[in-house]
Image (cartoon, rainbow, N blue to C red; front, side):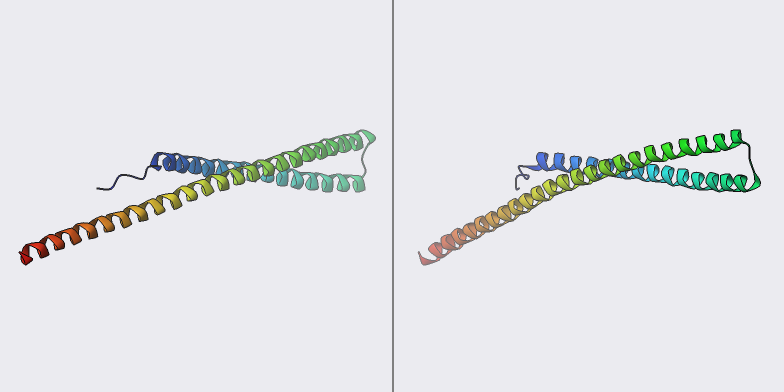
Length: 147
């Protein structure tokens, strides 16, 4: 029976880290999608509110109403600016998560290559041993027939 791959615990740890990195990347991308959706919702709301503002301007409004509309539009613009920053930060975290996952995957693949090489070596060693035993057996049989 062949001994197990000597780096198997390291490979198992690398698999675990790769799985964790993939899960983290999924969460990061989900968060990024949520921040984008919030941004889109804010943009749509601002566009609708601006359209209502323009309609109210055409219908006539008091200076207080004008100030209220302008103040609220200013607050919406500030919220949009903040949400843009959150989207950029989320994109950056997603990119970092992707790089982390890629690095862990490369490590895992490297260990898989080592494991494959070790398996091939063990198979080759076993075949050599089997051939040597067969040769010795045949040599012994041939020696018995010659005597």
